[in-house]
Image 1: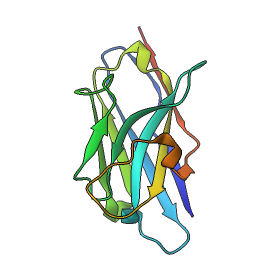
Image 2: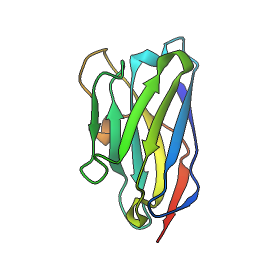
Image 3: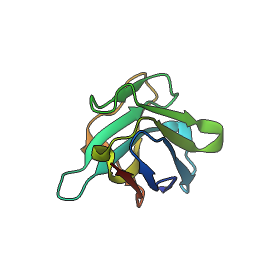
Image 4: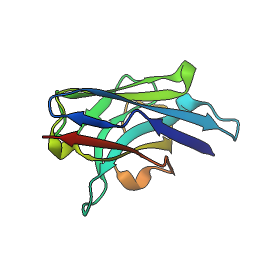
Length: 130
């Protein structure tokens, strides 16, 4: 089992920046590095969608086209933390952002299927005003 707690969401103006953080607490004896991690978001009236994902080591990442070049996902396995740095925020980035973890083999591959993720945080609200 792993518990995920997101933070860093708030109201910002268009063009602004934010850094989201997700801290994992592992309760079954596994290590944080055994999990592939991802950031997803859900806007009102829309389905939850992938934003960015990262493999266990941080060596491989994948981004949705809508955020490519503006968002950067990273992780610090020593701190059980995954980050997402967001630049040049747009009103369409407004959503609840969720951190998710997938217990997986350590490989260079990332997990892009939302249904593969086993654990989810409660989310943090990001609102971008125009």
